[in-house]
Image (cartoon, rainbow, N blue to C red; front, side, top):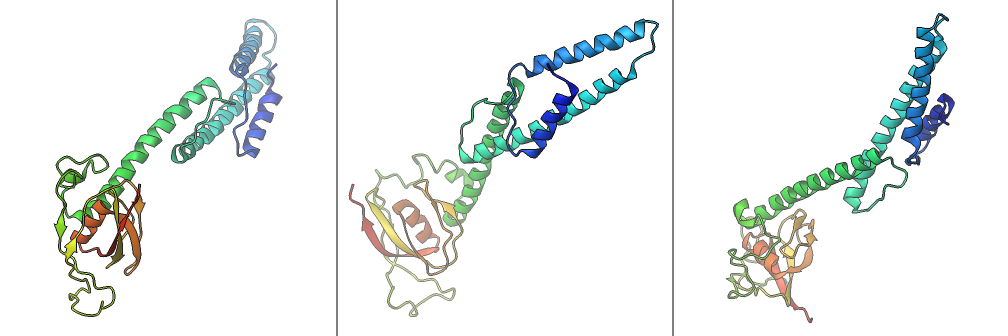
Length: 247
């Protein structure tokens, strides 16, 4: 049976623990029964000639206040759980939650996941567009198979100007320290390229859907052929050599 002492103990235990305190399905029904029972006693004293028992009224008001604080505290914990689980891709069942609390958890997590996708898309589109020098509309769906981007693997190999100068970096450099390069980058799943950054490069999403960087100027890194072409075209890096991937 629910009592005022019991609800206070629940609230004190909830404050002490970082985890959500388990409540069974009968909790809400027991709360309703308690309030109905106390309200009947209050109504009885009001309709009788006896003096109203204000101790019962005070107990009910205090009970409601503690219950409100308990459920609000649990709500904060549930929202934090939804936030953490959304970013860690963790699944959680309704263990220990009341039905309306689990509904809150699922809906909050869904909103956070949707918001996370929006944020990540904006971040990666911004980084990639700075390399390509193209409009966002052309790279909006760069994670999918490009049909009109000119980077499709079934099209002809893309020739770009590069020149390898690993051993003589100090000769014939432009005023900004970037080198002119001549050669050819082939767009192929079986090829990757060892590049060297010619300036600082922030983190970005490659055309193979992997996250790269950040890289310092002069740092070497291996990357897929499609992304290598973008970096070279925008003078962010130079080619050192190609790497053939054996499937």
